[in-house]
Length: 122
Image 1: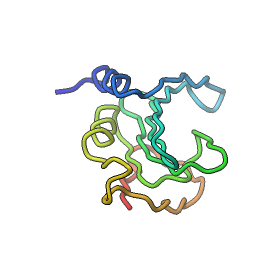
Image 2: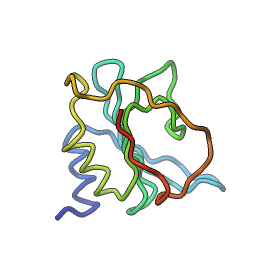
Image 3: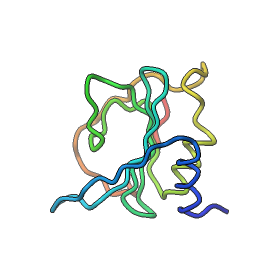
Image 4: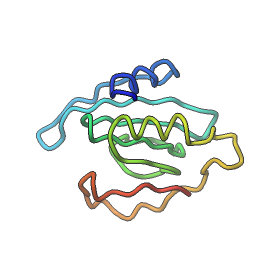
């Protein structure tokens, strides 16, 4: 069984770059792990806490705001272990014909608690 630390080490071993995002009064500190693919895709894991993380694949636009939920073609919310497992072992390589490629429509900016979010595949 993996631990959160094992999952994060696995990301680094797969060439994900780690960046600490500074907190603000309304936003706690976070860690961002990212890896670019051939244009136009990038995979990310945003860690807000051991039980609050998001993994996603985005279609790169002109500019990327890592805190915005837009331009996603796939995402998964959950614990660090859950989202890293889904990203690494279940999401196909972007060149795979079965990999998601269509941007998921963003329903708005309404914040939802982690338990209310759902997994989306396109």
